Structures are given as C-alpha cells and as structure tokens.
Amino acid sequence: MAPRPRRLCAFCGNPGKITDEHLWPQWMGKYTQATEPTRSTRSLGFGHQEADTITIYPHAMRERQGSVLGFVAREVCGDCNGGWMSRLEMKTERLIVPLMQGKRVLLDEEKGTTLATWATKTAWVNEFIGRPGPDPTPQPLATPAMRRHLMDHSTPPQHTRVWIAYHQGLYHLDIRAAELRISPSPDPDDPEVYTALFTALTVDKLTILVWTAETDRVIVPQLPASYWHPVWPFEAAFIWPLQRTVNDLAIDTTLTRHSQRHPLPPHDRVVQGDLGSGIRRLNELRDRPLHD
Ligand SMILES: [Zn+2]
Image (tube, rainbow, N blue to C red):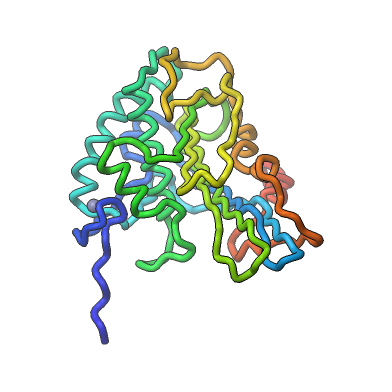
C-alpha cells in the first residue's frame, strides 16, 4: 500500500506538522457571552446544466453543533499557527475589542488593513471547518495562491472587498458564508465556473463582510456605504461606530441576494438544484417558530 501523502499547510504550502487552528481566537470568550452553535448559510448560485435549462440553487442554512469557540481547522502548520497568524491575532485583539464593544475609534488605514486581513484569513479557515479528511469535497473556493498571498503580504489578495457594519441583534460570535458558483456556458461539458465566497463575521457589535474571488468575472456587490463601510481596499479614515446599524436579517439578506446582482444566462426552463443532505432551505428555517 502506498504511504499516505503528507498533508500540506493550507497557507504556506509546506509539509509541516499540522496543528489545530481555532476559528475564533480563544480570547474572544472573555469579551462575549456567545456559546450557541453556529449556523452557516449556503448559496450556490446558478448556471446551465443543459443548453436550454438553468439550474438555480436555493439559499440554505446549516447548523453546526457545539460551542462556537470550539471550532478548529486542521489544515495549518505549526510554523504558520505560532508565527504570522499568532502575530496577526495579537494585533487584531487590541483593535477588535473596542470595536465589538461599540467604543469610539478612529479607523485609519493601518487598522482597516489589519481588520481586513484577519477577517479574510478567518473566512478562509472557516472553509475548512467540518470538511472530511485530507481530500475535501467540495474544494474550498479560496485557492492556495490566494492564501499564500495573504501570508506573504499581510494584506488580502486582489479581488477582495471587505466592509464593516455596526451590528445590533442576536448574533454574537457568528460566521455565515455564501458560496457562489455561477456557470455561464450552456455547454454542459464546458468546465468554466466563476466562484466567489461571501462571508459575514459578527462579533457582538461589529460585523465584517468579506468578499473574495479568484477573478473579476463575478460582479462585486454594491452595498450602501452608510450601513456597510468599506475597509478594503481602504478609502479614508472614519469614526467608529457608524451612525446606522444592521440587524441579523440584514446580514442574511446581504449574503444571499446574489441572484438580483447577477444577470441570468438565457434559458427556456428553470429547475431547482439539489442541495445535498444535512442542509435545509433558508425559507423552511425562517418559517419555524423561534422557540419550540
Ligand atoms: Zn504553514
């Protein structure tokens, strides 16, 4: 039997010893009461499966059990985990605590860049949570080159957008992601698919929205700047907290309303795509009473 190939670190690409990388840094537990299981949204976009048919996938939500502080990814080597990631976490802790408490902060370019880099890293670590084994299917949407760029430059890569919002709602330590896969070609044998990952991280009063894509072929969402203030690419220093707030529903709808932003390819028939097991449609979940 052939020996199992050594696991490569998802960020540096080296065959180092893989360690546990916590999705949420443990110090966050000191500042928030959040302990509930996390939920993730999933939204797979649309595209041709046959020449005359477009397949549209419904938005869905998946719940993961256990405390949100317990989620770990086993894809990062000890050198990364204890090196640049640890330094990024320390810089982020000093910055994020007053932001999540809604205290007054002048957000300049250095702070905005740290926040955007940390949030992008966290969105990508989240892609590995709960994936089975060394050969995950489906593949994460962030590529090894994108992750390597973040590590080498301490900034998000090209085609990344990051916004922040002043959150009021029930989400405390919350991460939810929409995966967009859009196939534009009517030829079922054409493998061309555009992808983008849209992730919302909420830590009490701070929501960070991260858009990452490999190309500029997927239309970047245009968000109202009074609610969603851009921090990457950085535009100008501003005072936190923002005047306007977003609630939990605003976060969900911002993540999942991609079909209004992307023109549908020409088609005669529309079919609903299969979501796979363990995932429920968001609408079914919404219709449930809040308390059983
Ligand atoms: Zn590494």
